[in-house]
Image 1 (cartoon, rainbow, N blue to C red):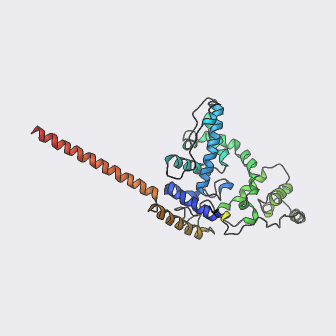
Image 2 (image 1 turned 90 degrees about the vertical axis):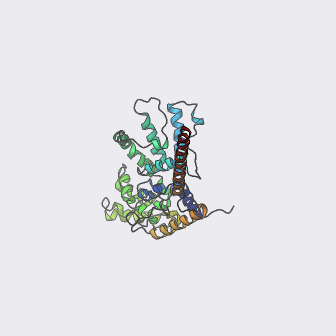
Length: 335
């Protein structure tokens, strides 16, 4: 089999999700493009959901071993992934992943927090939550957020350091995409949590990690200090002047998570002003055409619901007709 290009793989994922997930869930994907964890902002929703499911299964086994029975862990099934056909379980997993995307945290950390919260302070044995039970209830919302806030800063400091390996997040690849908006401000907040001097912090984040432009520290450093960093960086191969990891604006690697998702396009934020908006809309049209060619309809989930509804109506009418006929027969016998 001929290996697929990144664009072909992305297109295949878009077609698969459109066949497997209701449009009402797909249209929400643009809402999470700059709230989800940085690593996932350029991953298509289908692949992200598969990743979320794998993290859930791994965390579930650890949960069962710790709180229920250590011998049960290897036998825990978890959720079935991937899904190539519509299923209630996969839809629940999809929605659970969207909830996680609201929190801006790596999936494994989010899931671990949710499972640990389910145990509560008593440490008693509890049933392991399913994906659709990870999110806090109305009654537990305040307590859930309080416990989450206790660990949030530690989570971010720990995991932000690994982000420099993602090309899309490096300063040379900043193209004012919705997924990148607020990125520098957020990184600056994380950088400020460190205990090093601002000079060393600027060197680390601007030269070593390449996650912040040097200008982000203009209020903390003098002009001479900033010039010194530039001079020192140019002495080192791959310093501030490095473009080895630069991506073109049209690179598939920069396609945002909502790119080409049918129904996710809108005239307001975050789509307005997005450099990818036009290409995104065209991709969504191609995806819908491919789905229609394969299934005979542009929205197979909706069509399946309508077909099920029509079947229920026919069945109900048949029952009513049969009951009416029985009543007439009984009346005739009485005569």
